[in-house]
Length: 194
Image (cartoon, rainbow, N blue to C red):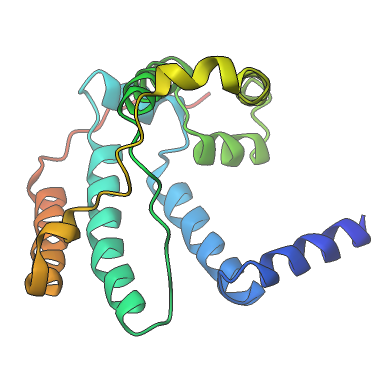
């Protein structure tokens, strides 16, 4: 067990994502926000899918706005890096539909599913096992599935079109998301806890 933990920590430290302490603090912050907002519950995610609970979208917009601005300037200061993936239009459409339907039915996304399992919700295991099996099937049959993914359109980013105004665009875009998260009316689906 301790060998596994040591191997995991060494793996994290060698991947260039920051120190183990930095990664731990980011994970702790993520977990705290998820717990505070309760978006790891079926009711919050299913409520968003039915447009009866806006907690999830408000949280996603706020976090994305803050991270957009923060990551941009961390990269500019050479304190962080990222690698965008190429756009495969067919893959985005197929993957988006599968992910969206799965998230609505399951009431979890991969991150919140893991948190729910850690809280002791055993029913989440079905979704996690399904995700692992789906990943294995995709990997095994990748060469057969690859034509469905579509042509590789390259690593296109919005900031590729902003020229010398990249920082201004990022600040405006991030601020727009933050403002939208504030302006979206608070709508919460109330449920009885068992």
